[in-house]
Image 1 (cartoon, rainbow, N blue to C red):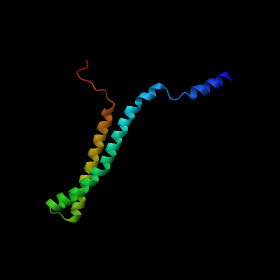
Image 2: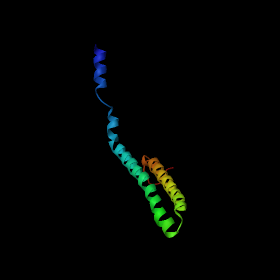
Image 3: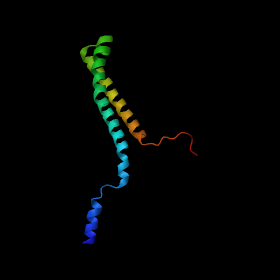
Image 4: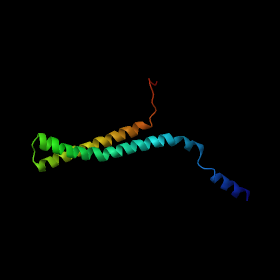
Length: 103
């Protein structure tokens, strides 16, 4: 009975202490993810309609069917830019910040 009591006490102790210091990095990662999620939804859609109405139909006097095509290209490029920025930020998020040269 002694080993089963010890096992039940060990399992109820909770997570190890090194998990408790990661709340700041978790919140930072969630904020980054939320920011890029909102950017991924709003930027391509906004650029699609803005470029269609103001650039391609307004300034360049293109037909409606041509402006749909070119505005879609602008939106796809915006998606790729947001994805590239997210990968860059996520890659450098956990990197240590060092000043100076390392030999």
